[in-house]
Length: 342
Image (cartoon, rainbow, N blue to C red; front, side, top):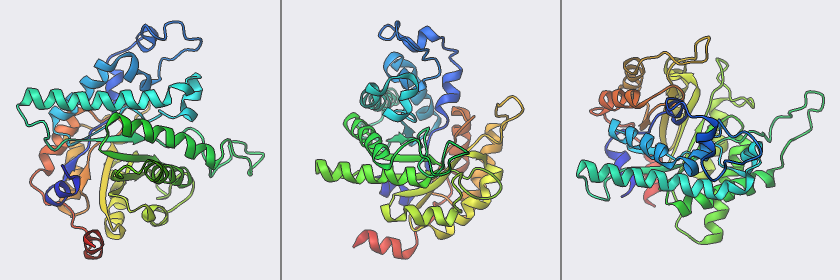
């Protein structure tokens, strides 16, 4: 299976929110702990990535719901599966294991989905190893009184991402997805870690998807970059795709996706939230509303990969898939096609 061939022929669908779906299970502290961590010295409820180990059947079930809704790409439950992020729960030592376990949940879901649907084992479904932005940033100081202070070093970021990449690859992912980027320097750490891992291991490199987040109406990332500056900063990685996710609903994200489609020399992805959160922090945009926005983007020739982020569900993905299935994907610039052939 070559995802590039699929992208040439159609718009691919990436799944929706993992956290939104986990919330539906109303899990308790004991559910998160499972038998293995029943005596853990800190509360772990809210550590959704831990569920890949303690409740793998739930994570597999969520993946299957997205596959049944029409997703071509499912993301591993690894948004925070780094030693840096897991330090909040003093579970740094689990980082590698979490990534392997999450990738296996996704692989199991695809296998069961194919079998139940009577599809060939090698049907075109892809696992994207989700690499989140970290809870510490290289570009911004957490101390307003000391602008030069950093809570983490570049080498620490690279090492954390390297371990995550190793776990994801060992678990069997097809793609590496650096997502929800609000600090491009963190993303560069992830890119460097990926390049270093494949250089060290001499394994065949996996395609890399990169997805940033525009945090407000200023059109900038949290660390202050414009969309064009962000794209320019990561283009050297020769990613499979560059796109946007999170922070904004589709209505608010539209002008930035339109801009990105004009400047990107690679495929373009977009998976917005289900609108903006209400006063209770919940998302009210209906599946049909989200799908209509993304259908418009597709008809304008802006996108190659679409899906959903916070607040989206299998119903959102089902509607999105139905609305874009007969629309041709955005065409790569001629220069990029020539480079990929040479």
